Image (cartoon, rainbow, N blue to C red; front, side, top):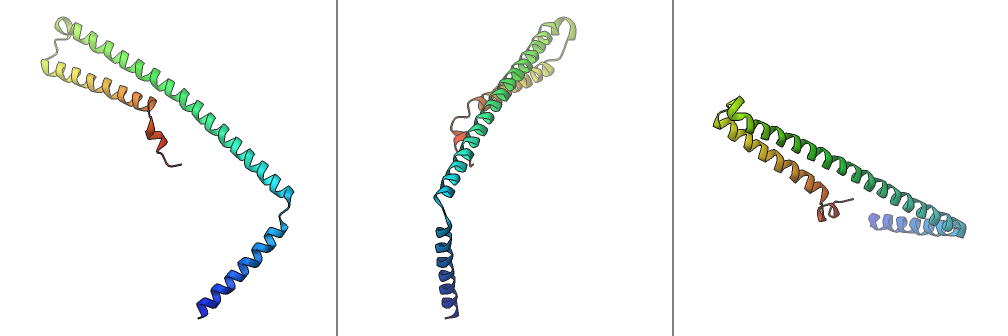
Length: 128
């Protein structure tokens, strides 16, 4: 019974507070709140655009870096392969390891870069 009385008192208090708050709201206050909301939405759009531009810049630098590293690495491997019989005389095991790791590195870097560039629906499903 006391619990029911307590709820009734809370409801009466809420009702009286709600009436006094609504009576104090002026049309100028509503307009001001709407302008502030529009300003916040505009700032949010600007921040999203800035983030998009920064992401684009970072992606371009990532692509350049990955292409440079892969190209350099492949040139080094080709150089080792062409000089192997004349100068280095590396064993077959070392050559297989070199070619295997090169293949994995090239494919891995390209997969990372392509996944970053073409996120698709993965990015859309992120929680905000």
